Image (tube, rainbow, N blue to C red):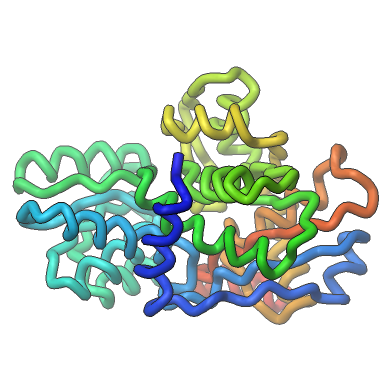
Length: 317
């Protein structure tokens, strides 16, 4: 999906904005996991999430193409939208972001602060995405997908960092929404010639990507009713599914309670408060019955953008 040249270009774009994010082994956390465990802290980027890397590369590639752009439009539950707003606004490109009803109010505020026009529409991400496509036609805007080769290339810069920080990784756990994170980890693993297993983690109540992996082709669901908004996908991306089927080791499904407990565990053992999707990788590690004993593992804390009520519930419990 991406090449060494893509990674070199992406690193040059990302690095002025995003220094290498830390990867730590936390002793208290390893008492819980029972195995060597690295945490890749993507919660400390300029938008508090890994997605900023992809947005920067997408916008840079778009500008390098030399074609005029009237504005960008996309749909999100939050971090993808913040990424595009951060990257495009810095270049003076207008950005419209569509979010579903009831979306995280703090993420909404952050997107507007980064310069996006916010539109609220639909019961979930899929309906918001369909409305964004309509707005693109009505307003003459360029629709930015949530999964794209340039987004993957940007995200892949954290995977390269992780393998440099933890060169002997046996397994890395990645939460899966539309797939940029897991596809980036698969691509980097293959480019580096490593044998690391890449394991996707989804919510039990949003299993579309796990179903797709098991079937070998995209499988949609009628609902994606989970509080883990970063993985609330019910219509998978076909290109992402193809990469996952070819390169992922397996998928793990995690309950709502397990995800909440993983948030609490990370807070207590690292003093970092993740968003729900940011704790999902740890929940997947703890639920993975196929993990080899003593494996050197990594979990990606993909973001820390949770709403205040949920954070109070986690930190105060």
